[in-house]
Length: 212
Image (cartoon, rainbow, N blue to C red; front, top):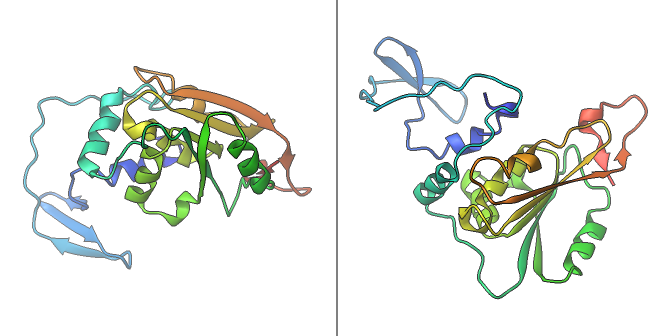
């Protein structure tokens, strides 16, 4: 059960063939134009065991940190931040919906905090999956408005499972979803929620409102 398809970018990194099974013994690959192209039958895959995850309110929360560490190792791009340079903050910018209307002020406030070495502002939508992972691995703290991109906080500090923190911003009436899940399972990543003022035109959809 992947809430908001929040593991879609992680699945793209798994060592599986990018194929769409369409029938017994047949498969197809999706091209860049979205069209399916027939392929020879894929080789059979054998698994020692399988686990069926039922759908429940908490979604896929509590996965062991070893899962994220394995993904990071296979990707080959997950480098932790250099030591001795203070906290490396990743400030997530959204250009479509749920934007921080005072992003520059937030950036400046973070940079003035004691112990902060640098603040990097990134629009994750402009990066591919590996680029997003690289950005998260190289930071020790992530700050972002509620959204799927916050799931990358599992990879903070080189996906070590400790020495990192997620500050998830939300507004009244909209849940804080990702920060609490950082502290589930065996993860030692800190997760903190902050409620801020909602900025929305009359009649707008609260799901897509901005935050100040």
